[in-house]
Image 1: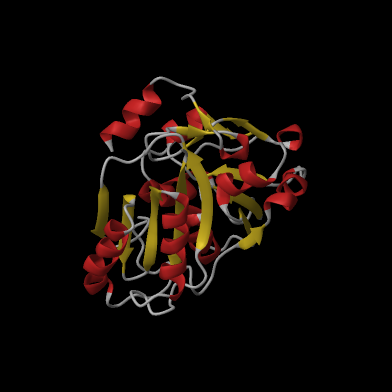
Image 2 (image 1 turned 135 degrees about the vertical axis):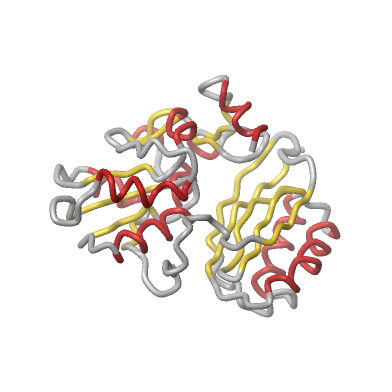
Length: 256
């Protein structure tokens, strides 16, 4: 029997995030889920796996249950499957940021780039003036990316600001599009770039995972596989499990 996997996030002020850790852990454990969840003052991010009915109950309780009191009603959610449990344990961790950019002034709840639906992404990429940026780490880019995308060659997301300062210029690069695995890194990256004076910043709604779920392979501009941070290692179109495109990918996952 296959298991359901839910990748999710939402930026929302959670000043009580420290007090939410234990109730959230109990909720997941009670449903028999495993995975990794990050809690911070700015929101929730993570991926969990379990039986389909348990995942459905978990999502419903996140959005409407007592733990968050309805504050996470707008979750960005991607559902996929796994032949075997892709996590070894359950972790709920407290963090300064649910995705670490390292700039406290960036607030995705106030300002982000223009969302582009997966169905409209190919059309945007046809613009010859567009600068397309893969905001992920180097080993992720090596496994797969959109054709024509610029690789920042970073080893962690917090290096993205240095990449922008070093390689991009608001006066010359006025129309920018970016993408990441599930959309969360682009929330912060687009907010940061707008603050730096870039005129038009677009990002793929729901990230690569939503694109692979939505766009038929025959129409796809994606090349390779999408790295995911669990024991499945990589997903392809239709969010089907794939063998890693490069042997080092599995080792990169184990070392994180």
